[in-house]
Image (cartoon, rainbow, N blue to C red; front, side):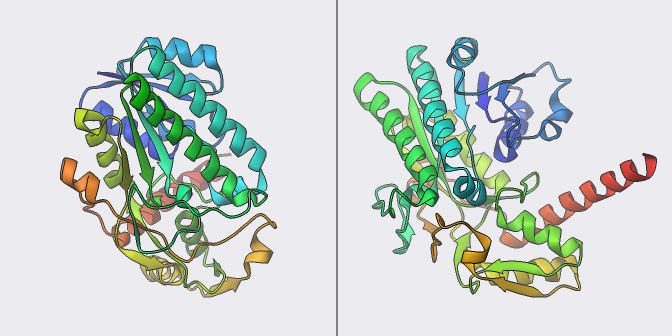
Length: 331
């Protein structure tokens, strides 16, 4: 199989490319490197299985040309991260809506199977227990920039589902819940790499609000395994699936575990939301996935704990620090 992976130089996308090439699938990566990094796939660029194209998914001509040359597409290119979405909502809306439209339409036009990655953000303020594929969306005001990303991704979900229902296109929608692991950057508000970087520098770990807000963190390798299983399954076509861990961890507890694993001489500093974000931000108390549909179809369950994810991020960040120190001394 030959796959088009949009956003393939990003955090999740690069691990997906690793998984596909490990089973000898060939991959065409399209990434504009706005949030992705070439170093994430540098180890693959000499492989005959991998082709890299620097470009944007809003470029309809490029996407159409790429889609014609592959058997299936995994669409991960996106403007992501709460900080980025809140500070640049227009960019988030335009890239995610236009990019989603271009990729989904091209896949339908060329009769290519598409796996569209969405987000738990589409549920908005709904925090009523475990969220399934049919759970309600409860969004705040459209003037709150926090919801621009959720709105854009919901548009993509609706478009993909409509193509599947009305035209018989092979479309699968996947809602990812708080994926973490190596190669994730804290630059756009991702909590775990930010906390790890602070701990490694023996700085105070910053936790927003009172830290009781909780999330279910899923290791990227578990998430990627789910993506591959769904891409391989004909029975997944036309359906939506949630992917994530069911282990709920308060953010303050996550910070404590990071300090413990790093053995850092750090404290936890609580920062009010209004000091950390612009006016367009709203926080959610909790968000838990119900992955029953995914488990029933594929047998998938997460195999890696939050602590394993923390340790993997620490090891990755430490290796990066070592490399940067060597470069500094050499320079």
